[in-house]
Image 1: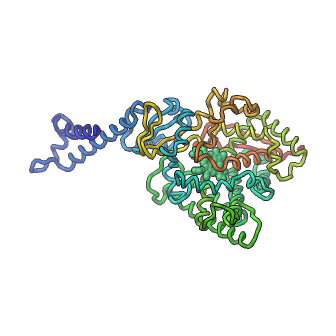
Image 2: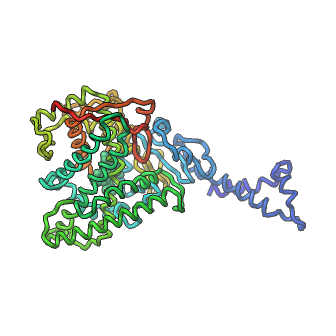
Image 3: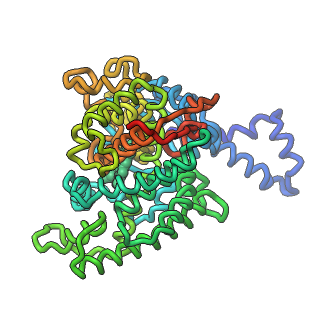
Length: 518
Ligand code: HEM
């Protein structure tokens, strides 16, 4: 109500001042019958809309910290195009809840542990909205957009694919992870032994190859993993918080949609082949086979038909959720370890103790369980540089988030995980890489699990967290024993590039020399 009257008076007030430049200008466009021309009217309407925009923004923002005025139409679009940790920090430090507007989307950022967790754990008020482009890339009927009970029920079926049993069975994920990692490292031994080179793209390919083999086994050909991996970079680039809204040819979102089409074609074929193989009575060798078998099991309560396309969309959602986060986690795992030789030495000591010289023997879950130091390294590396610093949600109705502030319905809500993971009261010297903080079961870090938001929290908490932890640990463990590592420090080594997730700006330039004295 109030903003209608404000905008009306803004529009009506203009002609009353004859000294206004706009008024003088418009006089020259006056038509013969004395009515104002379209130019004046357009100008007045535009001014009214601009005033309305500011009024609405201020009404929604109320007392929250944030710019007093929003830049007309685009708001903080420029910042969201090239996000920096420094800008995020400024926003987080401005208050536990703060406001921003981008393209007239009203955004509330939550930086405290309490509010971040409250958002992800309040499904009646807020649901994940991912980034705007996600629906165009993942397709609107992808399960990740389900909410409430439908989401819980769908997810229950998928949880079976990420149990410890599935990860650890002799022929399952961990064996595949091990084999693919060693295959890639044989190549790394050639590429990285003479001089340091960025590991970023090769680590991404290793990740994609591993994921696709774990998910699809041999149901897609070798060239498919390369093609999907190469094209996937377009999807990564389209994951900015705010993107150009129309997927016109040449835009990032358009290219990402083309990449998704390629990936979905291969994944649909994989689902089809998996069904044929399981119907033939074959042994399951990948996640898709596990799933098909489960769906065929007469005692399984969640039995129903899944088309090849639907299965492909689910596998694609796993790639979407994992590829960038896993690559980020892996690359920073390498960077943290190589920059702390004393910690890398401890990882090697543990490997020697557990593996007793059998460094070529495939790793198993039981062996990994005997490597608590390596697990602590992964946990700490993900804490220092959490791949996912925030997750966009949206308020489905007015959300009384605190005693004195209600988030308007339809706002974007951004629970930020980074501040909780760098809270000095829980993690003293929060920017330091100290795996030891996880070794004391009664220490501050282990006593405050609610702060460890690397995987989010609530009904949408990461489904692949054990799989991801295991894979990063396995890759780092094998690399520690196969190679001596060197890191070329450059002026941008410690600068963070945000491309959906966090990466070292120089791509982490490393040299790997095969070790002889294992
Ligand atoms: C280091 C690697 C990873 C990190 C840091 C990570 C982090 C996250 C985070 C923060 C969320 C959002 C949680 C929330 O809204 O509260 C999430 C959701 C999700 N993640 Fe991960 N993730 C990783 C790897 C993976 C992997 C390997 C997979 C699958 C194989 C996966 C599958 C998913 C899925 C499907 C969701 C959405 C779950 C739902 O909506 O119910 N993630 N992840």
